[in-house]
Length: 303
Image 1 (cartoon, rainbow, N blue to C red):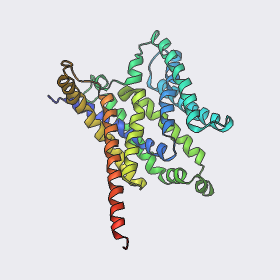
Image 2: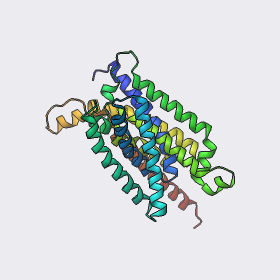
Image 3: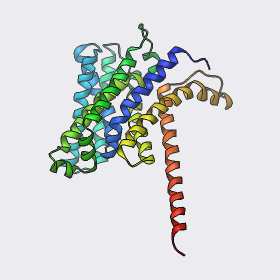
């Protein structure tokens, strides 16, 4: 394997973007709204397509504005269907994001006929080409670094509010903290992070970066501060392992199976696979740790 400067930019960009996704993912998990991240990642597609059709360009401000509006609309519609339609939370998310996702695909196909828009790039991401830039430092690298900085700053600034609203909304209300506004803010941050991650990991795979590191970290610790740090570590590690797997493991596996020689596969796809693998390791470790505690506890019991 010949490691080049391009590989370095791919790994750094993917790692920072995965970390940016992992931070809001922790609080979505604590609020039992992990599927809301999935709903937003699919629901922002109509906002992107409408922004393309209205402006006729892929200007970042237009995409961001369309995505944020669609993301907030997804969260509001989900809560509205659940509250007034008396529908279970998971079912309301499924109804809303399936409708918006289908609408977004139709609009994207329409937008692709008028502007230079690749639906596959929006859905699956293309970090290998995103880091190719005329400048020495790729633009998408600065975007990913900015998103990490913004999300870390927001978590540090509103850590108390996020923590109380996630674990005890009633206590938050009694202390003058609006749990509803905290969740709405989390929805907006998730929508912004999602659209900024489109270029690297795509709409479909961004949910893996939001859920898997946070879920794995929650299996390794019950302290929120530790979970946040572990989610960042696991997100970055999944990016490194994902790129290495895309370059070496996948082609070697196909060759051993006699399916012929092939080049590297999608880094974004292997990032999701790596994140799932890290979750499996964390799950196995949590089971092993529980069994060890049970055996130690049984030995301490009097005869």
